[in-house]
Length: 141
Image 1 (cartoon, rainbow, N blue to C red):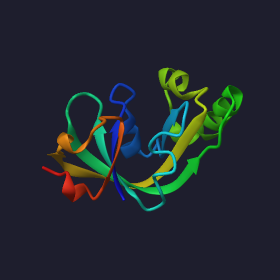
Image 2 (cartoon, helix red, strand yellow):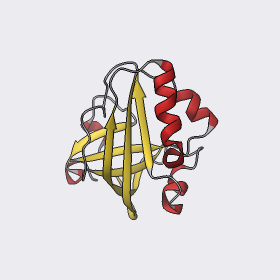
Image 3 (cartoon, rainbow, N blue to C red):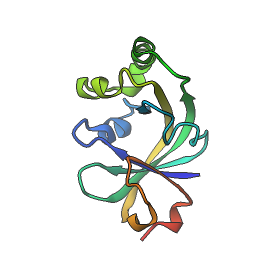
């Protein structure tokens, strides 16, 4: 399965991924929303920056996924803290994700830059920061 994933441009997530200092991505919510339970080992993540560039510029392979059960705020904070060496979250990101009831931690490997390409946003009813696409070629412009 392929996924289009938005990275935080201000937090320089892409730069850290390519420097090898960030090897894990996080998503979370009050409920079990995408990508909870929808991303698996060996899936491919295609990256887009959240700065209106709207172009896929890189990809990586999912190495490991942790889908949390329902967490209390302290449990959520501890799970993040225990993985912060891989997540490399800024203070603003820590505030955003800590306390979420459900977290998904996705460890990645083999990041590679791509020739940037656009994708068909009309294929998605909800433009979230995580878009399961099944096959990237079906949405590639």
